[in-house]
Image (tube, rainbow, N blue to C red):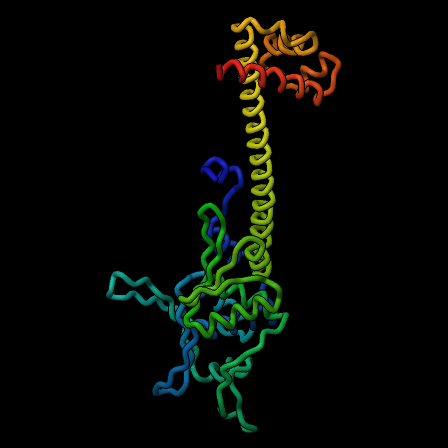
Length: 314
């Protein structure tokens, strides 16, 4: 597909979609929980310092970090401070760090079902597995896309989710397949979505505007391809018709040069002379003008070309 066709089909970018999700995503208690669960699974790390246990979240994407903070405020009425980490190694990108201290960290883990406490409310154990309730999906997959996803276009759309490890990659693929979004899993821990899986996923994230645009893109692309195939088919048929007409005109001229046109008989001679007058016409059009069937015209023309071939071989 060339650049002109791409522009006509309004190809959208990853940055557009992410900014839209950050600005338009609606948070309530359930979707906020989904956002926080996704952030914890993808970038949360429990650490033990002098003040006890804390949770540290590291974000590569600023929109993912902002949505996380908004979700914390909706769910816990608490907004963690974001700090920028600027690496000394210029080859690495900047990161945003959010830290939740002990008095909130345990509540956070218990709320998400990631930790258990005893009857006195003291920490008991961690849970490393999770199920994704339907009400949490939108927030979970929106945050997942912001932090790990990339929508790209080169001849076609592809959406990749780059997960921290293979186990998490397989878990995400399983969750998506459970809701009938078909995905592929690459060896490097990437979940790959294409065609209708992309706009289903974006709709799941609340990016309905772009889900519709991508859906329309595929409808228009398929329509363009059908029109292109039809045009190529018609062009091929036209080329064949011109080639057949040229061959027939050659045959008639060969018989004329050999002074053999009179041997054709009246019916075949009429067809031969009409072909010479109208080399651009199809055989069906010549047949209609003579008041005969296309099949009859075909057999008469074949007799003319067969006779011409005998003279070419002499």
